[in-house]
Amino acid sequence: MNLPDPNTPTPISDHQIKHLEFIQAIVTRLGNGSFLIKGWTLTAGGIFFGLLAKDLSWKVALTGFIPIVGFWLLDSYYLRQERLFRKLYDAVRAPGSTIEPFAMSVHVYHTAVPWRSVITSHTMRNFYGTLLLVNLVFFAGGTVQALSA
Image 1 (cartoon, rainbow, N blue to C red):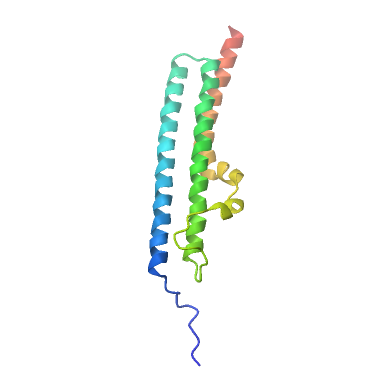
Image 2 (cartoon, rainbow, N blue to C red):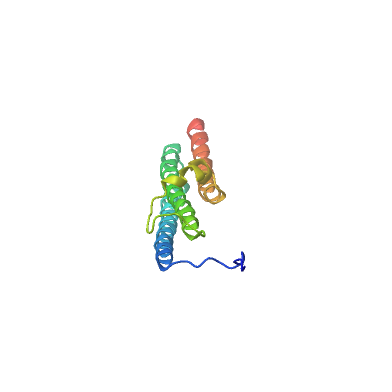
Protein backbone atom coordinates (compact mmCIF):
# COMPACT_ATOMS: atom_id res chain seq x y z
CA MET A 1 0.00 0.00 0.00
CA ASN A 2 1.41 3.39 -1.02
CA LEU A 3 1.09 6.13 1.55
CA PRO A 4 1.23 9.78 0.44
CA ASP A 5 4.49 11.54 1.12
CA PRO A 6 3.90 14.06 3.96
CA ASN A 7 6.54 16.36 2.43
CA THR A 8 4.65 16.67 -0.85
CA PRO A 9 2.62 19.87 -0.84
CA THR A 10 -1.12 19.59 -1.34
CA PRO A 11 -2.10 21.02 -4.70
CA ILE A 12 -3.95 24.33 -4.58
CA SER A 13 -6.99 24.77 -6.78
CA ASP A 14 -7.39 27.58 -9.29
CA HIS A 15 -10.13 29.04 -7.08
CA GLN A 16 -7.78 29.13 -4.09
CA ILE A 17 -5.06 30.80 -6.15
CA LYS A 18 -7.49 33.49 -7.36
CA HIS A 19 -8.77 33.94 -3.78
CA LEU A 20 -5.20 34.37 -2.55
CA GLU A 21 -4.57 36.94 -5.28
CA PHE A 22 -7.63 38.94 -4.16
CA ILE A 23 -6.48 38.87 -0.55
CA GLN A 24 -2.94 39.89 -1.54
CA ALA A 25 -4.35 42.84 -3.51
CA ILE A 26 -6.18 44.02 -0.39
CA VAL A 27 -3.03 43.65 1.73
CA THR A 28 -1.10 45.67 -0.87
CA ARG A 29 -3.70 48.46 -0.87
CA LEU A 30 -3.67 48.58 2.93
CA GLY A 31 0.13 48.79 2.93
CA ASN A 32 0.00 51.64 0.41
CA GLY A 33 -2.60 53.42 2.54
CA SER A 34 -0.38 53.09 5.58
CA PHE A 35 2.54 54.54 3.64
CA LEU A 36 0.43 57.53 2.57
CA ILE A 37 -0.73 58.11 6.15
CA LYS A 38 2.87 58.23 7.32
CA GLY A 39 3.61 60.79 4.61
CA TRP A 40 0.68 62.97 5.70
CA THR A 41 1.83 62.61 9.31
CA LEU A 42 5.30 63.88 8.44
CA THR A 43 3.78 66.74 6.45
CA ALA A 44 1.46 67.81 9.28
CA GLY A 45 4.17 67.32 11.88
CA GLY A 46 6.65 69.29 9.80
CA ILE A 47 4.20 72.18 9.54
CA PHE A 48 3.66 72.26 13.30
CA PHE A 49 7.35 71.84 14.06
CA GLY A 50 8.21 74.63 11.61
CA LEU A 51 5.70 76.95 13.26
CA LEU A 52 7.02 76.04 16.69
CA ALA A 53 10.65 76.55 15.69
CA LYS A 54 9.78 80.05 14.45
CA ASP A 55 7.52 81.07 17.35
CA LEU A 56 7.47 78.75 20.35
CA SER A 57 3.95 78.41 21.78
CA TRP A 58 2.56 75.78 24.10
CA LYS A 59 -0.88 76.23 22.49
CA VAL A 60 0.41 75.35 19.02
CA ALA A 61 2.38 72.44 20.49
CA LEU A 62 -0.74 71.19 22.27
CA THR A 63 -2.66 71.37 19.00
CA GLY A 64 0.18 69.45 17.33
CA PHE A 65 -0.66 66.37 19.37
CA ILE A 66 -4.05 66.02 17.65
CA PRO A 67 -2.87 65.09 14.12
CA ILE A 68 -0.08 62.86 15.42
CA VAL A 69 -2.42 60.84 17.64
CA GLY A 70 -5.15 60.85 14.99
CA PHE A 71 -2.82 59.57 12.28
CA TRP A 72 -1.37 57.02 14.73
CA LEU A 73 -4.84 55.58 15.31
CA LEU A 74 -5.71 55.63 11.61
CA ASP A 75 -2.44 53.95 10.65
CA SER A 76 -3.01 51.37 13.40
CA TYR A 77 -6.40 50.61 11.87
CA TYR A 78 -4.78 49.99 8.48
CA LEU A 79 -2.05 47.83 10.04
CA ARG A 80 -4.62 45.80 11.98
CA GLN A 81 -6.70 45.26 8.84
CA GLU A 82 -3.54 44.15 7.02
CA ARG A 83 -2.74 41.65 9.76
CA LEU A 84 -6.32 40.35 9.74
CA PHE A 85 -6.17 39.76 5.99
CA ARG A 86 -2.82 38.03 6.37
CA LYS A 87 -4.52 35.65 8.83
CA LEU A 88 -7.23 35.01 6.23
CA TYR A 89 -4.52 34.44 3.60
CA ASP A 90 -2.85 31.85 5.83
CA ALA A 91 -6.19 30.12 6.41
CA VAL A 92 -6.99 29.99 2.69
CA ARG A 93 -3.60 28.58 1.72
CA ALA A 94 -3.65 25.91 4.44
CA PRO A 95 -4.06 22.34 3.17
CA GLY A 96 -7.68 21.23 3.41
CA SER A 97 -8.88 24.80 3.97
CA THR A 98 -12.56 25.07 4.87
CA ILE A 99 -12.74 28.78 4.03
CA GLU A 100 -15.58 29.48 1.62
CA PRO A 101 -14.24 30.36 -1.84
CA PHE A 102 -13.71 34.11 -2.26
CA ALA A 103 -14.82 34.87 1.31
CA MET A 104 -13.28 38.10 2.60
CA SER A 105 -14.64 38.24 6.12
CA VAL A 106 -11.91 38.67 8.74
CA HIS A 107 -14.13 39.00 11.83
CA VAL A 108 -13.15 35.53 13.07
CA TYR A 109 -9.55 36.73 13.49
CA HIS A 110 -10.29 39.85 15.56
CA THR A 111 -9.31 38.16 18.82
CA ALA A 112 -6.04 36.97 17.24
CA VAL A 113 -5.04 40.56 16.37
CA PRO A 114 -5.89 42.82 19.32
CA TRP A 115 -5.82 46.59 18.94
CA ARG A 116 -3.31 47.04 21.75
CA SER A 117 -0.71 44.85 20.05
CA VAL A 118 -1.03 46.87 16.85
CA ILE A 119 -1.00 50.35 18.41
CA THR A 120 2.03 49.49 20.54
CA SER A 121 3.94 47.56 17.85
CA HIS A 122 7.57 48.54 17.26
CA THR A 123 6.75 50.20 13.94
CA MET A 124 4.06 52.41 15.45
CA ARG A 125 5.95 53.25 18.64
CA ASN A 126 9.15 54.15 16.82
CA PHE A 127 7.52 56.35 14.18
CA TYR A 128 4.70 58.05 16.05
CA GLY A 129 6.38 57.91 19.46
CA THR A 130 9.34 59.86 18.12
CA LEU A 131 7.03 62.53 16.69
CA LEU A 132 5.16 62.73 20.00
CA LEU A 133 8.43 63.13 21.91
CA VAL A 134 9.56 65.96 19.62
CA ASN A 135 6.19 67.64 20.04
CA LEU A 136 6.39 67.11 23.81
CA VAL A 137 9.75 68.90 23.86
CA PHE A 138 8.20 71.85 22.01
CA PHE A 139 5.24 71.79 24.41
CA ALA A 140 7.52 71.79 27.45
CA GLY A 141 9.62 74.59 26.00
CA GLY A 142 6.52 76.64 25.22
CA THR A 143 5.17 76.05 28.71
CA VAL A 144 8.45 77.10 30.35
CA GLN A 145 8.61 80.17 28.13
CA ALA A 146 4.99 81.13 28.98
CA LEU A 147 5.59 80.69 32.72
CA SER A 148 8.78 82.76 32.68
CA ALA A 149 7.17 85.63 30.75
